[in-house]
Image (cartoon, rainbow, N blue to C red):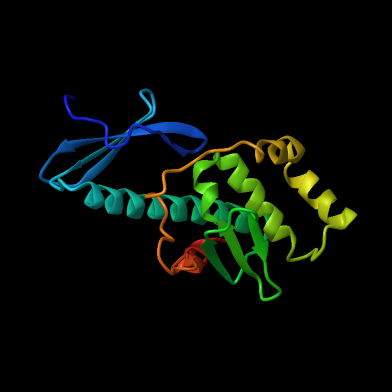
Length: 188
């Protein structure tokens, strides 16, 4: 490839460390090479800050797409859904569900394996019929995800992300998943 890595440190996506590289190309595109653990940005941009903006926007879109897919899956199987979904820069709380059925998820989950995100979303959705962590709540989780205890242990893993891959720099407090409930209109 002949082009330098944009960052000597990996960032994590789906629990896998990836390195970021750049290649000059007229049309912007991002190529994920899972075999070589490489995220290749092809673009005309030549400033590091521009790379970071493009990758961060792509990461937000990718994360929202995964959340949307998981919510659609759970809507079909569980028949429950939140009113709104937010991604927040929390570091000590993976998710929450408000009394108004607004779900919040930590941006840090972007780095984790999808099964962990599925568990967190299931956990928060379970708070709709079971507002506390009662035995009924845990029975519901166990029935829908029998290996949830191991997944909870996996949450203790650390997947650091570079500071520039943080859409919450500045004063932004949350990102709302736009128009996600529109997807449910076509689900029977």
